[in-house]
Amino acid sequence: MQGDATDLAAAIRHGRLSAAEAMRASLDADRRQEKLGAIAYLDAAMGLASAEGRDRERQSEPEQFAARPFAGVPTLAKDLGGPFAGLPVAAGSCLFERKGGEADSDLASRFRDAGFCLFGLTTSPEFGLSLASEPAIGPICRNPLDPARTPGGSSGGAAAAVAAGIVAIAHATDAGGSIRVAAACCGLVGMKPTRGAMPGGPSFGNHLGGIASELAVCRSVRDTARIFDRLSGNSRGPFPDPSPVDIGNGRLRIGLLADTGSVYPTDGDRLAAVEGAARAFESDGHELVPLSWAAFEGSVTSSGRAFADIVSVNLAALIKALALDESRAEPLTQAFVARGRALPATMLWDTLNAAVLVSHNLWALFDRVDCIVMPMLSSAPLAIGSFPSDHGDTDLHLERMTAFAPLACLGNISGFPALTLPFGQDEHGMPLPVQIMAPMAHEPRLLSLAARLEAEGRWLHRFPVAGLPS
Image (cartoon, helix red, strand yellow):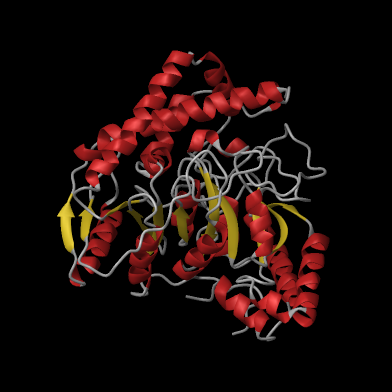
């Protein structure tokens, strides 16, 4: 592992480099890798002012500085979610102008309180509607491990920036796998927290009926654990705050799903990585419990339908509320708006009831197992252009996304936490990701199990973190 945000924060805290030097290194790294398309909007002056402020704090109030786990660490917000004051989110769309910037969301305030220094927005597909990050307004975001491939979506810009070492960690959102798919494409750690664990206020603009969550894409499990610990809780939303469960040290029942059916088949090397991860747990004395695709197939179908209906209705409502000219949007976005506008309320109600059963069915599975190890992606990251938005066939687009990440939506619709991390590489040097899912509020268990797999050292980051002393 070539460094992470924890390493960079320690270097700044101990005076091996200043926050301003770290920021300048990130800005230089972005200039060198501009063709990657990871950053959609950059404000160097904002970043340097924030970093210089942290340097002053380190001198004048060292205890307060030291209490911030990521003090002085440069980072980027996603061009969707938040918002972060001074960073004009456009959701990857020409329907919004990049000027001004709303006040901080509750989550954004916590990012700043943790010590992060923000300097831009990462590339996202228009309104987050894709598992690639290629908005028509640009830039096209590419995978730093292979620029001919996608870095995933909709947090592809965030993942590309972190994997390339432009920043060590970046804000990301996940409504249909967007944190985890992008992390899986780029060899990173990505966790979608339990529903209700992360703040979404005060406007809950990225709430999406509870399926969306925000956190980060990270280079290590420890970074994921630290940022989750710092940002989660007291969310003041419509769901009770989940209290993290004491994981204990007993023998676990590890559910193993090493099949995604004949309709959405997963490549053999990716299934082998999943089985390898489960065998690693078995070697520690845990019990393996084989699970069949039949136990998940209905929930996967219901999850996909719920995602489609919720985002369609949300988009239709947003267009109406803000009186936006939808004819300027990408054809696929226009089709999702039309789909949402035409959806009968009774059909949406049926969808939401089916989504409740997705959660109920997963709880039944967790009566038998303590966690589930499963595939994250069905194949290596796809070529740029594999998720075009110049058409209006929403069903085709949704089918393409499900085929690429069959189990991505399951965590969003159920509300259960899920985490992905790389567990080896394929013959082309692309990551072999594994996904672990656990009952609600079991993030400590997810993180503990992920740390166990990470310790095997099967994946090494290709690019060092900008500014991090060797």
